[in-house]
Image 1 (cartoon, rainbow, N blue to C red):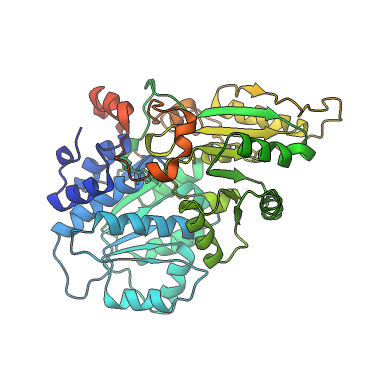
Image 2 (tube, rainbow, N blue to C red; image 1 turned 60 degrees about the vertical axis):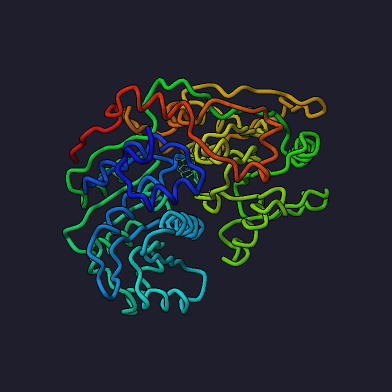
Length: 454
Ligand code: AMP
């Protein structure tokens, strides 16, 4: 399937081509036509599936066809949980709208509001925002949402996890009743369904990953290691594997700082990224990582959410998350946009229960390996850790998180792992979602387009 066949205008096709996208990803194939029909859409898609273009391209198409109002009121509002994600969506919207006469702006907290307010005053068609700063500016009378035609709730599950439900409800009262609603979420809990039911009109259900698609998954591995030896093992993996870029997850902010310091001491350039870091520090760390100046990014779950680092070859769980679903989000940072990747978990004996919970959620065992010189003292008394799994109890096969199929959009591995280390050089290559997209489009595109009433 081509982007052209989705009904996008020449300006958008040009922009997509400039990005190097050869064909629409599965979520794009399904979501774009439905959004262009002006229907409400409830989409099950994780970061890394191409979902941003999935909603941005049709929004741009619709807005560019609509009547241009002289003062450019905000006509599309994209709400997203984190600053990083907001900045990333903004970059995407800017890139895709390069050949259109539409203005986009982004607002989030943690930075002065002055520049954001000035841009909005000058007129923007599309506003990307985190809920807190949006309400803050609205309360000060600095922006109006009275002309919003298309509302997007991106990463809705994470917004609820982060406690934004009340803010979202307030925002819903500020936008006109007559509008198109798009909700994107990696998981569909009872709360998400309730929220969707409260404001969406007869939404069409769109899924990124139909079952039984023969694509290769992310390579997952567990290395058993005592807690006290984790830093040493990680250093060995990075040095001996000649990793040029890796994303390492820790459970706490202090843990992230501590590990980053240790890596620096061992001559591995790293940066920590977490909620206590200022926006400037986060942006700098991320930019350094993307430019290859920083080899390792150590992150907590919330900070890492939404990071867009194409072709990231290695993700390491330095500590397993207490929430099993975070494991799925974490490993989704590798093998982005059709590339293959490796997700390694360094597991101490006391994390055994977490492994079990994650495997239950995944519906599969993660292969375990032991590295010489890093034996675990199995005899130590195994401390029980609290396991939290937010997987919905009742089966909802279409959207249940963490099932194998949720990772299945990845395309067949095309190069060996060492090649994928050379990510910096590869970035500008033409990118394609490969076979999986083709299989799905040929195999009856409507399978994932199901009507669902709430
Ligand atoms: P997202 O899921 O929106 O965060 O996108 C993940 C990555 O996929 C981003 O780096 C996009 O630039 C990239 N991407 C989006 N659509 C396509 C496509 N059709 N082909 C190749 N890469 C894409």
